[in-house]
Amino acid sequence: MSNLKETTPVLTCENVSRFYRKKEKLVKDDGTVTRTSIAKAVNGVSFDLAPGEILGVIGESGCGKSTLGRLIVRLEKTSGGNVLLQGNNVEDLIKKDRLGFRKQIQMVFQNPFDTFDPRYTVEKALVGTLKLHGIGSSTAERRDMVLEKLNASGLIPAKDFMKRFPHELSGGQLQRISILRSMLLSPKVLVADEPVSMLDISIRADIINLIYDTARAEGTAAVFISHDITTTRYIADRIAVMYLGRIVELGKADDIALDPMHPYTKALISNCSSIDPREKREIIKLEGEPPSPVNIPKGCHFAPRCPFVKPTCFEEEKELVEINGRLVRCGSAIC
Amino acid sequence: MKKNFEKFKQALYGNTQFKVGLVMLAILLFIALFAGVLSPYDPYKLSEDLLVSPSSSHPLGTDNLGRDLLSMLFYGAKVSLLVGTISALIAAVIGTLLGGVAGFFGGKVDMIFGGFINIFMMMPTFFLILIVVALFGSGMLKVMIVIGLTSWVGNAKLMRAQALSIKERTYIKSAESIGESKLKILFRHIIPNGIFPIIANTTMGVASAILTESSLAFLGLGDPNIISWGQIIQNGKSYLLTGWWICVFAGLAIIYTVITFYLLGDGINRILSPKLRSR
Image (cartoon, rainbow over all chains, first blue to last red; front, side, top):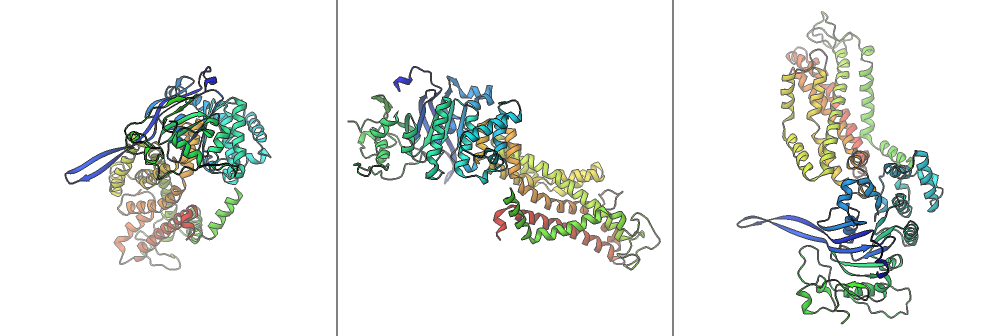
């Protein structure tokens, strides 16, 4: 992290939160009372993203990582905190110049089968995107650009692919086209929300490599959201581990993978399969389900499931502290 | 695309309602288009053969003014089809727009538009039509517009539900993140992908519009200058005992047309919705 500090971050999250409110009507003997329950999907997340850096975000389902992705690309509004793109607040940017903002932050979605309008051919979807942003001067020129990109990413013969509809393509091909469409706009930031979780194992590596290569080639920073630690470690420079809407550990990918500090990260990593069968591993088994993000009890969110729990953990939550160039929320594992 | 077409063709062949409806519609269209050639007499021409029962010279008899009933029914088919189709189309456009906007934008917009839809849903539409026609006159164009303006509620409800479900799909989120504007998303993605139930409902809407027009004419609120089936029945009801054929054949014509469009609508519904297709 230290070597990246000189450059100004392309994306900054300051205390970003997203709460979902739900009003419930409770009928009591003395009349009706409405109660508002708040689900804290993302709760005070802060990080910087340097130009060209790839940040992995991992955590189990329901920890708010997808919501964080949607907040960054401004598909949802934050309930608190700011998302800054090159120092400018995203809310201001979208008000001033929606198209210009969208061009700079792009997203690749989890479900490639549903990413494209089922009535649109690949050509219509891709050429339409270029036209929308005024890239290229004529339809013929845009078509050529798309053809070239399709050819370059191995969708050959490109002319044949252009005429196909989404339901005629495989998940891997669709995800390739989805990444390609995002990269057509040369964005500054690419958010990939579990881009390979719905794909066959056999083509995951291709997709990951495509994201990695195009991001590196264009100098695009990326947020790679996943629940798969191994792929995230492979692609990411840094990894943020999320639990119940909060970052519990943030540091260099190798540091996190090889020497996890937070008890939750430890449990995650210990449950990861290794390619080396002789490797000695101690699997930490987590008891119970992750608590629902509605009405979280006070104290450390992870305390009820933590194998290293202490009585004080239920009293107050620890802040993120910097230890050896990484941020960790809980020191209980170190001492 | 070809595969889809094959599937569609298969569904079409297996769909008895649609096939029967299509044949019945073809007959109806043929009659309406060639009413002038097919009619044995001029339907407006009065003659001295008053209330003649069905015979070889007048296959369906004549009415109280000596007009040939068969020719009148042929000409009435034109009116019924025109009124039905145009009213249903007006209803489809209004319903799609209001429902689409309500469902897609949600929040306060939905509260206003959705509330508007619900209010209209409670309204006794037929009496509303009666009032409007009584106040503003009963030209054919006016009748068509009024029926269209009062029968869009079902379409709006359907489109709102479609928009609510489609707007959560990934391709809508992806269109938004690519930079498309809300209006473009509504008109390019949500409405085209959610229009199918509206198509089926509009086909059925044609049938109910024809019924409404007939009811209006029966009450004497139709366009007096044209021949319509409802009007024939209104005329004939005084002669139910002496000239039963007037009301009976005009009524059968209405029933035939309504059944045609119900069969078509139901058939389209079954072709387009995979849930019903397997039945």
